Image (tube, rainbow, N blue to C red; front, side, top):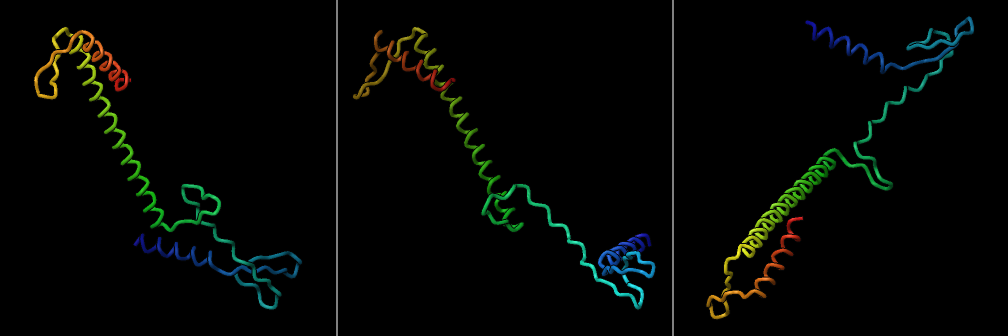
Length: 151
């Protein structure tokens, strides 16, 4: 019952808002406005009020840029969001790689500084131990790696 009454009230206001307006001068010389002028009076039909323009979308349009349809704007926002997510994922992957390389470089420095004998394999597959000069060069290389990855 209440819904029906509310619907009728809304429809009544809508009909009143869309009614044609007139302007006329009455017998006393005063200007009058209304939906229907009295008979025998010269009335002027008024233009309906201009409807309000839709609010512009969130982003301001650049010079020469055409407005997008709602579907196109949605797709554009979706593509931008996907690009941002992809960039964030790549950034996270790069940060994790850098962290792991830093840990490995620090472990290598600790290993070289630990005083243990360090060995490598030569072309024939035999184990060769590093002398003090070679060990110093390996330590410098490992420290450069730490400074590169751990900043």
